[in-house]
Image (tube, rainbow, N blue to C red):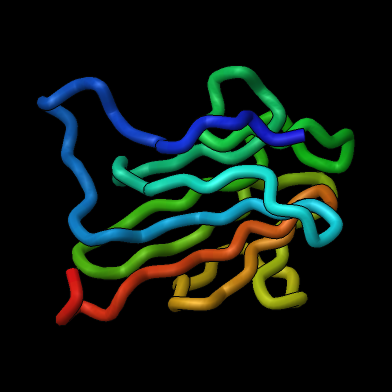
Length: 120
């Protein structure tokens, strides 16, 4: 199960915010579980209660992966998880995310979307 919130955001106005409309849609066995607007520069994914996107699966590490942005690019980074992080069915350590990429963690799929820059 994934924590069901509609948005991942920072309540602290001092922290740097993302620009644009990047989103993650979480599915499990083809069923949509949650949708997140990625509003922070760093998004933690894993089993622990302090993760921004929580995945309740024994195959997911407590702090499994992180999505972060640098300038206008978004990345996913595996945090030395036991079972790995996959993007488009390929195991990764770090990957530059592109519109339509699917991140797989612990049996859950996280579809990354970012509208074209001219629509942001």
